[in-house]
Amino acid sequence: MKKLTVKDLALIALMAVLIAVCSWISIPAAVPFTLQTLGIFLALRLLGGAKGTVSVLVYILLGAVGVPVFAGFSGGVGVLFGPTGGYILGFLAAGLVYLLLEKVPKQGKVMDFLRMVAGLLVCYALGTVWFYYTYGVQNAMGIGAVLMACVVPFILPDAVKIVLAQLLAERLQKVLKL
Image 1 (tube, helix red, strand yellow):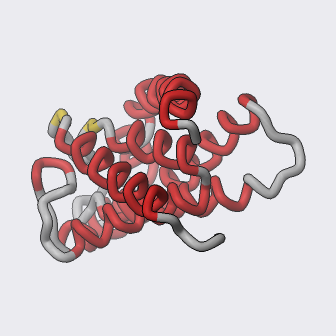
Image 2 (cartoon, rainbow, N blue to C red; image 1 turned 30 degrees about the horizontal axis):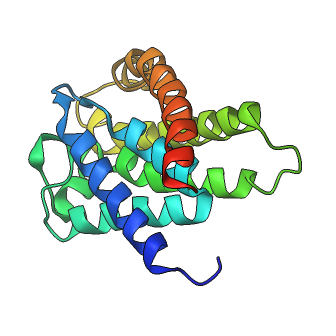
C-alpha cells in the first residue's frame, strides 16, 4: 500500500465509524442481524481492498479495547472470544480476500460483486466454525443446526447488502472524487 494521505486516513476513520454505526442497527439473535456487512463491503468497495481492510481492522481494534462498537453496543476482547467473534474476525478475512482478488486482471462491476461474495463466504466459514466450537459443541448443536442458525437466515439479507454497497459506492465515488 502506498503512503497514506490525510484524506485516506480520514476516509478510513470515517468508514470504521460507519461500520460501528451499522453494527448498532441490530435485531438480536444468536448471531444478531446487523448492517455491519453493509458497512464492511461499502468500505472495501469505496476505499479499495487495502484501505478498506485497514478500516475494518480499526473497527475491530476499537471494539477489542472496549469501545462499544459491536452489535448491542458491546465491546471488549470477550466479544471477540465469544460465539460471534469468528464473524467479527471474518470481516477482516473478507477484507483480505477482497484485497487478494483485486489482483485478478479482469475488473469491473461483476468482479466487484464477486469479490464481495467471496469475502462473505470466507466470513461465513470462519464465523460458523468459530460459533460451532465456542457454542455449538457445548450445547450439542450439530454443524447443520449451526448453519441453519448462523448462515441460512443471513444469505438473502447479505446479498441485498452487497448490492446496496455496490450502488452506494458507485454514487459516493463520484461525490467524493475517489
